[in-house]
Image (cartoon, rainbow, N blue to C red; front, side, top):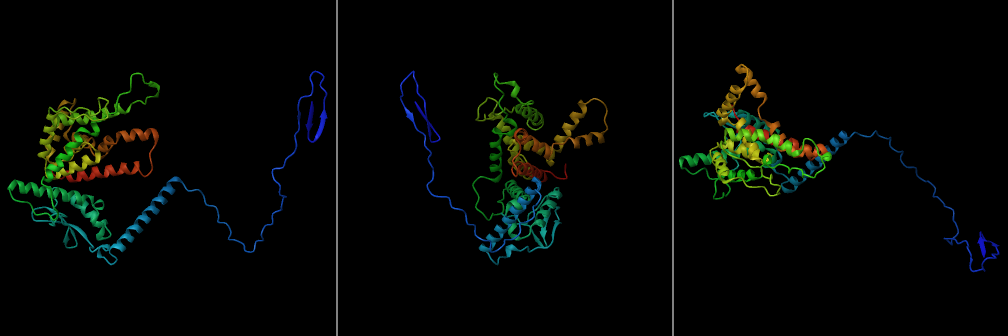
Length: 403
């Protein structure tokens, strides 16, 4: 057998077996062209010197800078759209200098832009705020003080309290007209056959079956690995949060009503509440004051929970002062030890069900999930503040000085 290595041949005679195969290895080039040296071009013009290195910005600084750039781009886009639509429009200007609240003879408050009153968008009449709601009138005046042009007043999200107050004022006019059998002021826009109160009640009842406080996470299966479970579980937190609120409602304003959990059976389709429960809640909604009903609507839409909105209304509504006193008396009579009345009132003020409690209850699942997996910037943090803003506006509308 012959072995050829590196171009040289070495032969070996094998005595045990005859010569069978000769394998030859040869060198083979992968390219055929000859190497050519590079000829760099001469530098005829020197460039600018490199910029000095900058320190890396923090995550907070980058987020603030990005939001500022986004706000500037949005502002430029709005200005461009305004210029294309109406280049010389007076809507780009603010035609008022001073915003103040004026008290009418009947005690109602009207927000004035210089000498012009803020008017209702539907009836075109001056928007009157009840005499028991000076905080709401002041907040509406602050909204108009922060506007920089008349065009911004056409966007409801920039004047949310004015929009809510106008809706409550429309409902109050309809209720007054129905009580005196007189037609309400003719609106400037066509209306449906149903009344505004009926539409609000129908919308609120839709949230009773899918109430946030009544939709609990399913229990873990029996064969689940207990080492991977988080303690306390989401279901335990939801039940612990919902039970005090439901107990308050069923003992104070809906006596005898039984609220069933919507997803307790394990199905993804919520179970409907009993017809008796719906009838009692519908009758309770029909008897609410116009401003309280509109404030309740805002709270329900913010928290996706009728029970949560009703709990806020019981705590801050003007017509529920007797209910709060009754609950306070029952709590003081069952407690041990003598307490002064002032100390009890201070303790009650500290334990009031307010914005923070409502926001925590309606966003419990989101808080539990973000605690495990983290928050999404510009999403969860914005929603957290927005739901508190909406609950605050609801309390301003439903509350007042007669509490």
